Image (tube, rainbow, N blue to C red; front, side):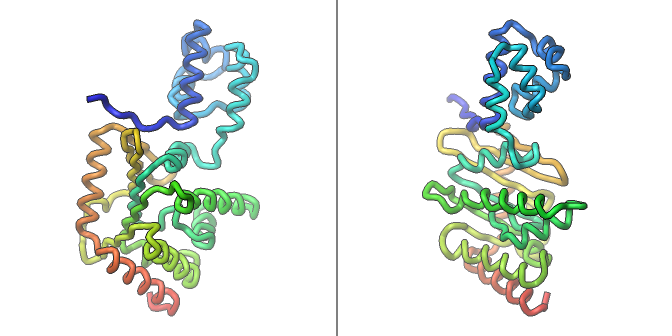
Length: 274
């Protein structure tokens, strides 16, 4: 049976085209790296879609491959608003038919209100400017739209109870955030489950996890930590991630119980009873 591959991101298509043009020009990665003035490893990252060249590098690539500005022009369309380790994930979210989020400490990004997202940004970004904060909120708002369109994916969100209890942005902002999550679940746009504290240890206690499935491609898993993330398409690793999600889901409250707990937590934040 032929193994399915996950869909290629625009970055990966860029890298594949670079590899094809380099081979056609009769250059090795080492020879191209000497012209571009970078390491052969970096050329390998470009061709794999893990990194994008900087404009000056793309300009030298065009000169080396005699592609008349092709890679520089294409680069302008690929520049991401996201950090490198998340850029491919944001692209794949747009193609997924099923997305399953697990959050250990924070509301997942696609569900965040502006006030909640803003509070997070201010907490970890030193010396930010108002313009940077506005850009961050605009980018987060655009990402939320995947749940609004007619081709939106089936979305599941599994939350550790700790997500509900930590007050982010103040009591009113936190209450508004929790009500938004509950509203999305009650409207049918989101399947919601909460892992309560009294479950104790559970299968996903060590990490944030996102699972994505596609119509004609293999599924992927994404785990994230501090300033880093790992997008996995190895079948064994994806299968292990899916199993862990299923185990944790088995320990979670039902959707109705979860909605009730989220709304109760919102009321507690509103009235300062956390």
